[in-house]
Image (cartoon, rainbow, N blue to C red; front, side, top):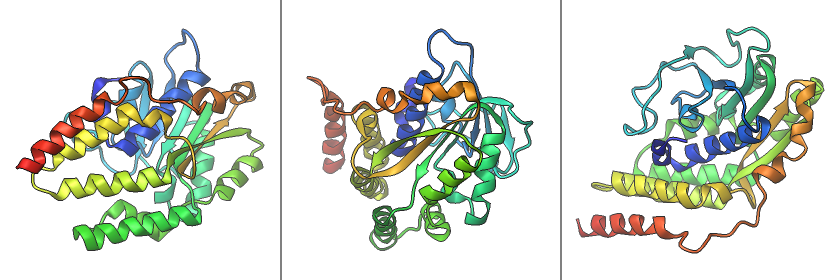
Length: 287
């Protein structure tokens, strides 16, 4: 993983780092480069987590100038502007096809086609990771939208799209995979209360004068300390890891235990990244 990746927004870091850990389990040992298709991976951030693999990005939007923040380089290689519901690739073109926080931006009537296209273009595995509808998740998103609109005086287009489309239901994803007789494992990730708290803090700081430094430091602290352990309780997201080929099925059996063992505690000195955050907060409060 590149050092620049630690500067990514906490939720983007969390989902991409989880995929990198999943790749480490599915393609273990001294392996050749994995050929990956990242559908909806507009920022090309996954390339920062898997720099030795070959990642093609497919997105409906044109490529951005940088990946989330200017200090995270955007890698423009292998960027294809295309819809995830009609991918311009042959069957089985990639070892791994992934989609991060993308399905909720797809209209409900085309979500099945979207998932089928991910499966069609993979010769190995598929990872679909994003928010799943449940009453708690819906309430949290609506509370955050109210906070942005009434507290900060802004509207977040991505969140508004979530609310307009409604979050995808677990049953829909499961039905598509079962129709194709494809085995899968799931990994909940992104504790809902932590997600809501972080979102509130981040965007509060962002709108204050000189708040960008605090915003980024908060992300870095979370990414260093919490991201690998944020896999318990009621979660905002659920990662579906699918074996698109029969020979891939055995690797699913121990996936969740290997990637999300649980019970890991902070080690001695593990809170050190928080000191940098406190320095930035103190400096900001003086200004």
